[in-house]
Structures are given as C-alpha cells and as structure tokens.
Amino acid sequence: MRLSRYFLPILREVPKEAEIVSHRLMLRAGMIRQESAGIYAWLPLGKRVLDKICAVIREEQNRSGAIEIMMPTIQSADLWRESGRYEDYGKEMLRIKDRHEREMLYGPTNEEMLTEIVRAYVKSYKDLPLNLYHIQWKFRDEVRPRFGVMRSREFLMKDAYSVDLDFESAVAAYNRMFVAYLRTFERLGLKAIPMVADTGPIGGNHSHEFIILATTGESQVFCHSAYLEMPTPDSGVDFDNAGELQSIVNRWTSHYAATEEKHDEEAFAAIPEENRLSARGIEVGHIFYFGTKYSEPMGAKVAGPDGVERPVHMGSYGIGPSRLAAAIIEASHDENGIIWPEAIAPFRVGVLNLKAGDAATDAACESIYAELTARGVDVLYDDTDERPGSKFATADLIGLPWQIIVGPKGLAAGTVELKRRADGSRETLPVEAALAKIV
Ligand code: ATP
Ligand code: MG
Ligand code: MG
Ligand code: MG
Image 1: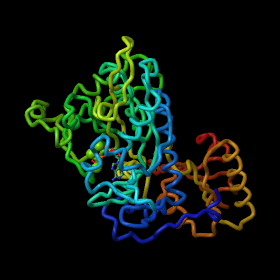
Image 2: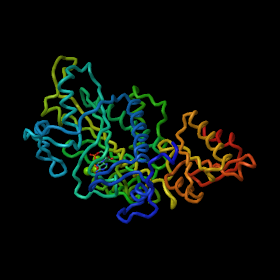
Image 3: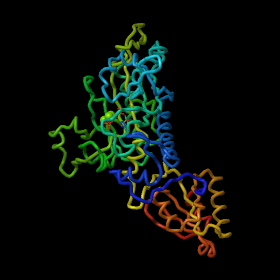
Image 4: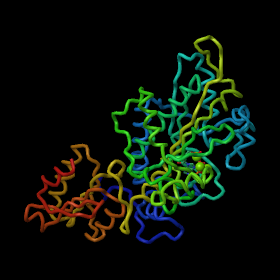
C-alpha cells in the first residue's frame, strides 16, 4: 500500500476524551472513529488489525475441531422467552420492534439460537461431539461504555458452542477450547492467565476467564506468579488426545488464580509471599460449561447408544477480538506509539522514502516495495513528501515492526537503514541484506 493513496487519518494532538493509552493511540493512529457512545467505525488501519486478530482466532478454533458458521445479529424475542432469559437479561439487551410489531433484539450472545439450530438437526449421539462458532457483532447496552473499544456497546465476539452427549465428553470439549485459547493468546503476543470464574447456579470448576494483567484493567485479580513463566502448548498438540489435553489443563490450573468474585483469601495467603500476584486485569476470553441449562427448557435432545433421548450438555466460549485490539496495545506500546506483535501488525514493514521526488531514492524504494510485495509481505510505502521526522513519527505511532529507511546519502554508499520497532535498534546495511532479515 502506498501511503499517498491510503486513508490514514493520523491525529497529532492527544485526544482529551480518551482516558487510557490504548484508546488514545487507537484514535491517534487513525484506527477507529466513535460514531455514537460505545459505537465505533473501524478505519482501514484498525480493520487490518481486527482482521488479523480474527485470522489467528479462526486458525486456532479450526485446529481444535470447531466449525465456523455465521448467525444473524438480530434475533427474535420468542427464542429468548423459551430459555427464560428475555425477561432476565435486563437493560443490557437492545430490544427492537419490526414493522409488524414483532419483538426482536440485537443479540448480546447466541446460546439460544445455537440451541435452536442443534434442536432442529442433531438427533443422535453419532452426530456428536460438535462445536460451532462464529465471529459476529454483538450489542450490549453497557451502563458505562468506556475506554474505546475495550468496553463498547457494539463489539465483535468470537463465540463457540460445544454440544455433547454427557458430562465427560463436555469436559473434553471444554479442554479443547481451553488449550485453543492458550495458543490463541500466545500467538497474539499476550500472557493470558486462565482464572477461576463464577459458574452461577450451575456450580463446578468449569468456568475460566482468560485475563491479561494491565494497570488499566477493570477487574481485580489474584494469582500465583508461576503462570507468567508457564510454557504454552505448541502447534503439534493433538486435539484428539483427551489425556494430553487434560494434562495441559491440569498444569494450567495447578496454581491459584481467581478473579475478585471467586477470590479466596485463605488459599491466596498459602502462596509464598514472593509469588503472590495481586493486580488489575482485562478479561479477553471466557469459557463456560453450562450443562443442560438451555437444552433442557428448549428441548434439544439426542438419542444415546441405548436409544434413550436426553438433553445435550453444552458450553460456550467467547473471545472479544475488538477488545483484544485495545488490550494488545495496553500490553505493548511506548511513548512513541504502538508496538505491534508481528502476527497482527497492520503492515509488517514500512518503507520510508526520505526524499520523495529524488529519482534514485524513488527508484530504490519502488524496487524494495515491489520485491517485498512479490514475496507476500504487507508493506506500507511512505511515498509522501512529508519531512523525515514526521515519517519516523508516523511509522512509530502506528507500530510498524520493521522500517526500511531509504535516503540519498545511504544509497550513495549502497545502503539503507533497517529499524526494529520493538527495541528501536537500527542497522545500516545493503538492501539485499535488509530484505533477507525480514523475509
Ligand atoms: P465484562 O466482564 O468485561 O463485561 P463479560 O463477562 O460480560 O465481559 P462475556 O459474556 O464473557 O463478557 O463475553 C465474552 C468476551 O466478549 C469477553 O471475554 C470480552 O472479551 C468480550 N466482551 C464482552 N463485553 C464486551 C464489551 N462491552 N466490549 C468489548 N468486548 C466485550
Ligand atoms: Mg459484561
Ligand atoms: Mg466478565
Ligand atoms: Mg465473561
């Protein structure tokens, strides 16, 4: 992409309305634009990041055996009356009437709809296990939308729903998602700690919130510091091997980790003092086994091997890609701007032409741009006639991981400069050597 033809509305001033650094940087980098309270448009740079986050989530969901679908944003109130949640959900639900006065709603989540789909098609234990997911916009009329896309009213969610014959196989499904989440957050460059979360009336141990530690987090969390060093399972993990998955989950639940609602002072005090971590955290994901809570009232039943029909055991598994875009910035930035992990950077490489209009510099930049593009690298070529200082500032603000700086002086000596955003290091080297470091 040539910057001269791109749409990158950078703000030089620090926006006053933004209270936390990720919100400020997303506005300054031209990633998002507020359209109403808690409702945002995603501008080109933001859209690229959001898509990359979703791509990682999708790959790991698919690897674990989940199957992608797409359910609508608008749902019928009657569906929610079947589960009893239409009345219970309260003011967070945006309720709408269509022209025929039928009651509709903008989905805050999809348990009911998924249960309805299962009820319609899944009749036998032979159709199980099943895990269906989608990545779709949700609406929750949050009392206090704030911090930009961190807590917005309209937000993107990946929500998966597992369907199983009994408790044991539902636990296996839960473990698959648990491990898929560990891998997802690791690939997004985050240390997310699974913390025991509330299961409400269902009880049991099968609800975890995945939390990343950040001073601007909205919840208070408590855990053992061992989680910060724990290795995450690699891509070779076998999702068909229930024993292997259980041992990973056992390791990742072997130390104390709980959110405020489930905090147990006594258990926390038993941790050696130097390992006690009490911090603020951001919930980026949540997995939850809820058994027959929806299948029972909604009549989603399958016949078991004995021919007897029983309600299916289900779980739901959410990740917030739009919140993640902000959370990643909270975890990875400096005073100059965003530092994207390579996997989700909007562009992996920036090519900075320090003297646009100078024939030799233009030609060198064009050739680097063409070469990288041909090799499948996402490049943002700053071909504008801005001052060098402003180009450096923009590249750092929007967090381009690699920056190739091309100017007439260097070219005369046959070199360019290669800068790494992560540590600010710079090297002077021939073009070919610079490219070799990137691809
Ligand atoms: P919170 O405690 O932050 O209100 P939640 O527990 O209500 O979140 P879930 O119902 O568990 O959220 O939804 C799954 C995921 O969706 C969350 O872990 C989070 O990543 C994301 N999410 C939830 N609410 C919002 C929101 N208002 N804005 C952005 N992302 C959200
Ligand atoms: Mg909430
Ligand atoms: Mg929560
Ligand atoms: Mg939650």
